Amino acid sequence: MSRPASPYLAPGFYDDALAKGRHRDIVGGRWEETGRLQIALLRDEGLQPHHRLLDIGAGSLRLGCKAVPYLERGHYWATDASLPLMQRGHQAELADPARLPLAHLIEDADFAFPGIPDSIDYVIAWGVFTHLPGENLGRALTSLRHRFPRLQKFLFTLFLADDTAVHAPIAQPDGVVTHPARPPYHVLTRDVFAQCSSAGFAAFARDNRLPRGQRLWVAWPA
Ligand SMILES: C[S@@+](CC[C@H](N)C(=O)[O-])C[C@H]1O[C@@H](n2cnc3c(N)ncnc32)[C@H](O)[C@@H]1O
Image (cartoon, rainbow, N blue to C red; front, side, top):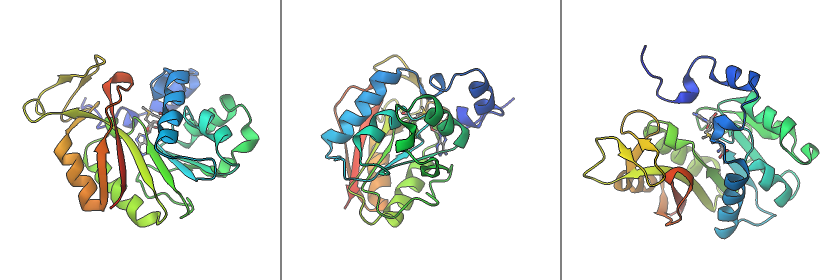
């Protein structure tokens, strides 16, 4: 049987995982550490409580657990390919679920952001494009640029490859093996710059060492 382009597209993937109580595992585990790191990096890039944050591919709200208490009430929005996964996070993981309206969790696998207000200031997509074919980042960048006129910064993670190694599997610094044409995917730095630029963003990759050897990119409207 052929391998799906993303592990999340495997038939029954979410239903099976949720039935087994594995909502933390399927977003990558390392729950506390990664949630804390995401909010710290967002704050480092200027996020403040009055800003409105969109968490693309938010999963079971590993970041939401940190961002919802930090932000003013109602300023956190989440999308994911699976609404039940986000709802599980809301039910099982938030310290104060009343601070996050369920209507702020929106199922969206196309980066169209239906129902998200135009007033979003910051966007993050952590561990999302690492599991999707490369054209998805370009689609998301174009959509973000058109949908959110106040957008200040878009943070996203990727696995990178250099020119000599891009066509073969690569062992990333944390030991994860990435691939050019199946998940987890690696991409060329210059292709990322080109995608950002053609969607109207300037961008750079931060030096931080992140879990699993991902690199954090920061993009802003050029
Ligand atoms: C590795 S998990 C990371 C989740 C979350 N960002 C975090 O750091 O905890 C990747 C997430 O991307 C979601 N996802 C996969 N394909 C997607 C798509 N096309 N659009 C939106 N979300 C997607 C998955 O459901 C999953 O929750």
